[in-house]
Image (cartoon, each protein chain N blue to C red):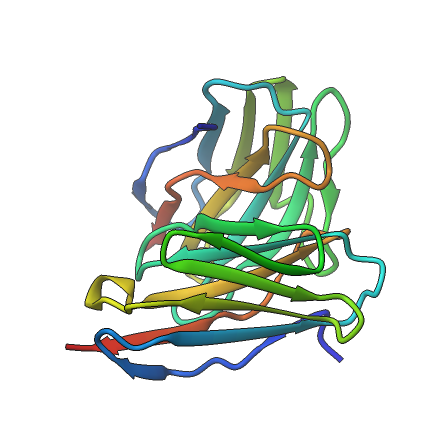
Length: 116
Length: 107
C-alpha cells in the first residue's frame, strides 16, 4: 500500500528558531501533498496544498511567510515553520494521494512540534 | 453550514454491539467519501472509502452512502475495545474532514 513517511516525529525548539518537517511518498509519486495541523482535542485543519514545481496554495488565515512549503520533487514536500512561537506548538501531519483526485489520502505519522 | 458535519460524541457502545457513525455533507457535487480512524496522538488511518450509493462491506466495517440525502455512515459490527478512537468522515471535491466522532467501546 501507499506509504507516506514524515520526519521528524517529534521536535522541540526555542522561540524564534525555524523548524523543517519533511514528507516523503515512499512508493509512489505525488504531484500534490497536503499539510494539516491539529491542536489537542480538535479536528484536522488543512493548512496548505503543496504542488510539485509550483507555489503552494494556502488556506485562509495561514501565513505563507511563516509556513514555508517547498515541493521540489514528486516524492518530497517540506514545511518550514519560521520564527516559531509557543502558539505554533501543534501536531503537523502531511498526506498525499497515490491516484487521481477521487482517491484516498494517505497520512504520514505526524510531527509533534513543541516551541519553548 | 459546515461542509462536513459529524456528532462529536462520545458514542459509547458495549463490546460486541454495532456502532453506527453518521456524517452529512453540504456539497452535492461530492464524489468521494472516506472514513478514517485516529487514535489519540496518532495520525489518521484509512478504514473505508465509498464512491457509489449503497453499502460497501469490508470485514466488520460497512460504509453506507446516500447521495440524495447527502449522508454517509459507518457501521462497526462486533465492536471491540480496540475500536475506541475518533472516526473522521472525509469528503472531496475539496479535501474536507469532519470534526470526528469519538467512539468508546465498553468492555
